[in-house]
Image: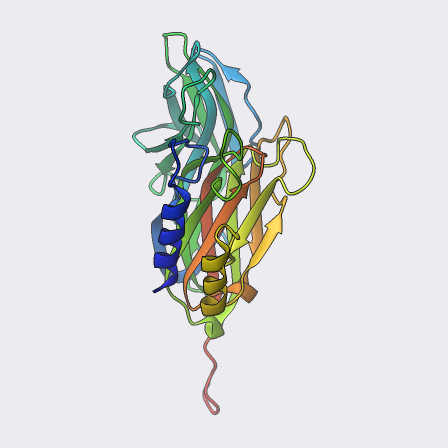
Length: 327
């Protein structure tokens, strides 16, 4: 039985509850792009800040500076709009807004995009929607410079929402850069260990599928994004990040995973936000904890209340050794 099958079994056991509360980890982030080439990857929140409530025709903007590594070009560009408290009165609804990208006096409307949403999922007051919109801007962002992404609340029915910020993911390619392999996972999973949901249930897991020859890996970095993560006050471990590490939800199965697949690593309270900056962006080296296959990351809430929206694993490979006598 491989790790993914074990993890699926754990999730099935955890989700056997009387109610289907979405405060549990029930919307795992999915891999939307996995590739390998000479390049680099960067994720930025620009000058993101919390918008407060946006009413009809209110606007919001985040600015970014794009500086590709020397000799490289932009292969992939994706923008993520993180929003919360989308409502009409006391009813949770999906937000309506017009988004655009500006660069060098040119403004391009952003069409389509992928919307990911989640709610607490049970009948109560303030069951408002949260989520993210993902836009592929690979055709629009192709050169260095200053860019801005803006949106305007276009709903004329009195509905409102708040924006926590906007993220910009850039993947570069260039013949002078090292070979990298990366997995880009995205979505929206609302986690909160309250109302009958314990921390083990308020855990979401994302997978980076495929085989890895760790001996050829020079560095490995994990990037995760968590709107609202670390904003709630309190003591103890309010949130945790696990990489190739059991969460301890089911001791017997967890011990089997540990024996079969070795040890990973966990960190507590890595997400920190405040009233102005309400998106936690974490990047950390994980090369020491890589497995040969089925690597995964888990994000856990322990009374903090957070969203899990992005999980990215980036491997940089060693340069091939030059044979003796070669040039």
